[in-house]
Structure formats: structure tokens, C-alpha cells
Length: 414
Image 1: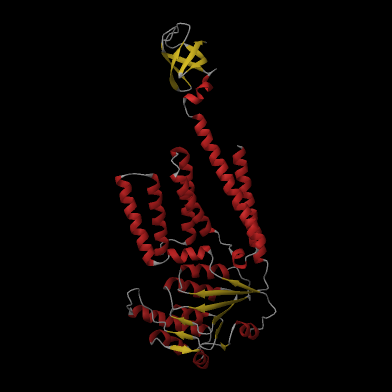
Image 2: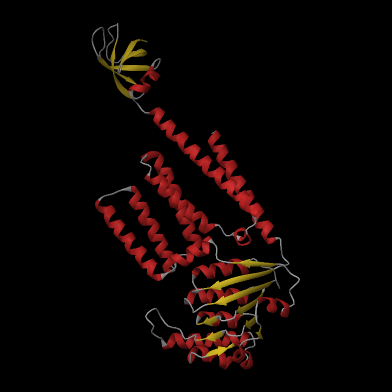
């Protein structure tokens, strides 16, 4: 009961700290968020953009510094949808020497303001599958989508459509002249001055643990490999069942489903948490140690993927970092202490010559007659024991253990 109360206290402490970190981060409404997207547009960036923009205030400035060769369709659609439906004032900035090709072009056109630096370029947005093929139906759909985004933001519709149908590219000057981009600025400082937000504090946002994990597992090649490994482990389990192999197979199967887009990040995190906790609980019955280790790993992965308020990592607030570290240490130590306590209980309950003295004073029933010089059998504490007595005691009579000689109990009639 005491361990249970301590566990509840730890959980309440963690929840309080999490609420504190969320409130302290999001209480700063007058600030400019600068979000960096540098690489393939995938589920990791889609999740990151959604977490940033869904927590911003109406009219708050968000600057997306974009440099990408493209990415996947679904994450691109999700990012564009988030930008359009956000109440924030979203500016996409393509930095000097940067580029916004393919998926980056759709994201750029969907922004409230598109700023480009000298030496940057936008375009080449023709949709292709992983094999490099172009589906005319998809091409037509994407070109009209691009045109509608341009129309929504007051940009040149035909120039935007040409980036899809003709793979057109535009330099910063060309993009401004034809009405695709809004501004040409040399760097971030100039952009801040042009937007007239130089008096607001800046907060830089990059990929965190959750978004990095999503980027890794959303790779189609890795998802396919994980799916094959999971199938192989299941086949091995059918021939030679082991609990740890079964747990690993399920975990890999769930991660592959995440990569293939069948389930979302939150659902994946919850499933991994359930599997991990179940494995740890099962360890108390099996007692091999492997399930506890595997369960702990899955639980940590699930927590990292489920935790959505990583902004203290972005700004590296030392106070919150120290508080979070202390809480994690306390939780881990508390869990290990509880786990070791349970192991000790199991060991103490085990029957061995070392703890046989604990039977002294216990009552039992004779199952095979005992007497002077006659070794019989008695049932004590749900186990059968060899026993002797200075009295002749018949089957069915009740006895009390009064001593131990080696592994033989000495009993008397009750």
C-alpha cells in the first residue's frame, strides 16, 4: 500500500511539472516563433508544424525558414492545411542560397507572406511517385491545388500552376516580379525589420525528439524493413515461443504501421506504452528479466512520442530542464526500488533450506503417518514436507511444527 501511495504521488508530481512547463512556455504570447524546416518534408515536420501553429494566438507571427528539395504528399497537405487554418500570421522565408522545390513550393505559396533572399529559388513542383513516375490524374489534381492556393493568397495563379505542370523555377527577383513572392530580403534581421516586429522577442524552434523519431520511422524503406523483421520474428515465435520475441514483433509491427501511415503518432505512442507496461507487469510472473528491459524501452519510447510540450527543449530553459531531470530520476529510482522490493518479496516467499525455519509454529495436516524414528509426510503452508515426531500421529490429524532438522520438520499433535 505504501508503494502504491508513493507511485500516485510521483504521478501527480510529474503531471504538475508538465502543466507548469506548458503554462510557462505558452504564457508568452507576445513573441515571434521562428521554425526551421531543413530537409525532407515528412511526418516529423508535419507533426512539428502542427504543434507549433495549433498553440499560437491569433495574429501571432510565425516565420518558417524553409530549405527543402521536397517530400511526401500527405505531410505536405497536412502542413498546408495547418498554415491556412491557423490564426497565426505565417511567413515563409527562403534564406540566401536556399530552395523550396516540390513540396516546399506548395508550403511557400500557402503562407500569408512569402519572402525570398537573393540567391534563393522556388519551383519544380511536379508530383512523382517513389519510382519517379508521373500520374496524369495526380498531376492535374496537384496543379489545380497549387492554383487554388495561389488564388487564396492573391498570388499569380498561372505562374503558380506552371511550377507543377511545367516544373518552372523562379529566382527571388522573378518570383516577386510575377507575383509569386511578396518580399526580397537579404537575411532574417531585414525580414524582422520589414515585418515591423523587431521589438518582439524571438524564439527559435527546431526538431525535437518526437519529430525526429517520426521522421525516422516514416521513411517508407525503413517501414518496409521493420514490417519484414516483424513477420520474421512472428514466424520464429511460432516455432520457438519466447515472450521477448513476441513483444519485439508487436512493437516493430506497430512502428511499421506508423511509417506506412496506417496509424498516427499518438496512437503509436499509446500502444507502445500499453505493450511496455504489460511487459513489465508480466515480468512479475515470469521473472526472467528480459521482459522488464524490453518493456522499459518501449515505455520510454512511448512517453517520448506522446509528450507534446517539448518547447522547453527548444528554448533550453534550464529551470524546467533541471525540474524535469529531477522528476525523471525520482520516477526511475522509485520504480526500481519498487521493482527490487517485489523481487525481494518473491525470493522471500520461495521455499528453500535457508527459509525453512519460517515454518516453525505453523499448523499442518498429516498425510502419511509420522512417529518416533518414522519419517512421514505433512501438509504445511500448501506444501508437502517430510516430518518426524516423538508421538505416533495418524493420517488426517492436525499438527504444529516445533522444529527443523535439516529439511525435515519436527511436529507435535495439536
